[in-house]
Length: 272
Image (cartoon, rainbow, N blue to C red):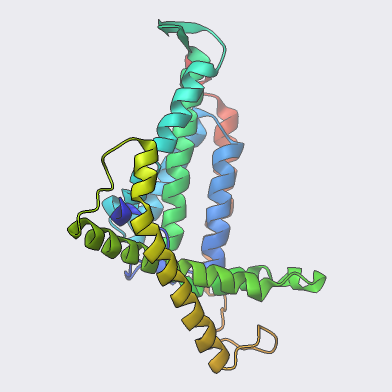
């Protein structure tokens, strides 16, 4: 399961998506997520599918690698589908014991499942094609206007950068500890819920100790190098918009306009 988590990982490739300014990818991810929840017609989902498939193809990231993150949310996805399937009132379709499946429940369940899957894959496109440093630099520069009202933009970006860097490290550390404890006879699978919780203690204690040790080493290293916050600091690679970034903004604008138009067509409205 730990190997299926792609959050914080970067997939190196030579593609246009990788070369885009991180601010463009942040804006594109936000536009895509907003469009998923703002437009709910079948036509809009078709447009979103075509757009997402095109971006994945251009990114040169294998589709199988990008969908690995879905395995970690299967339980959440199933719970969402089941709750929407049985708890949405409407036209009855069939009855399972005391639970009634409705037409509106099926439509809502499918819609929510598609949104969750597309949300995870769309977010993965951004993280897999952007290094943590570029991502935090883009976030810091995008939020810079908030600094005028005393929002600690640099500190927020720094915390995000550290978190993204530590996620793969802690996952790898967890995997090593699990293998070491399993070799010593620890069992993380058998037993009931309480027993499984107790079995996690030999894993969590060394993991927390390792995390605190790494955090302390990082704090000492930053202090030794004279780090005192973001005031007056400069970037080794300052972010500057290129022609491809402006074209990407235009494509995003066109995508949102097409989504809006598709949601108004209602070609499949009579089928549901």
